[in-house]
Image 1 (cartoon, rainbow, N blue to C red):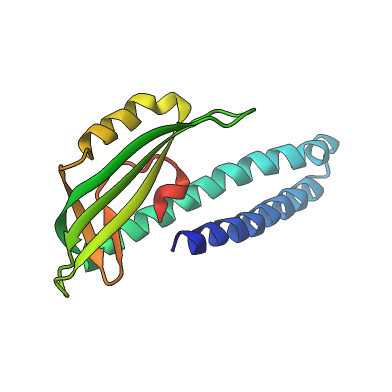
Image 2: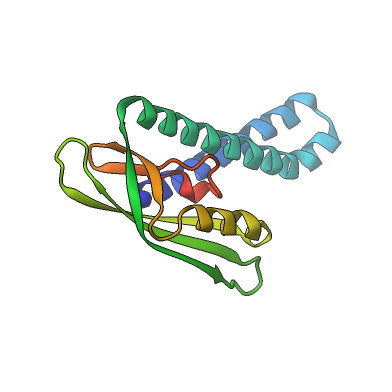
Length: 164
């Protein structure tokens, strides 16, 4: 499901940005000002990026609320928890928390393993450590299960890729 989400984000961002650029160009031509024609590209790009982040946040919130409405809440026991720092040369690093939990599926009763990676930017180290403490080995964590998907109940998602 994560691959589908990433492909949708890439295709959607290209489409969204092309519409934002086209709209900026139309507004610049409509006004007839030279300043508007000169600034339409950077202004359209900035507003398009901000607008796309709003769309991603809204999609994530809609999916979470849908899963809460149709899914079944249960408790999972964390069996693995690993917090690592990923150094990315030339960019800010990231903290990655990988959690594996075990639970009994609410409808089938079979033992199921849920694996999730949470990514935090370098400057959010304390938030990553707090979540790692909360999801330490042996701790119980609330999970929402619907058919073949499950999500940890985390109040705030660290970055956009954690939405799915």
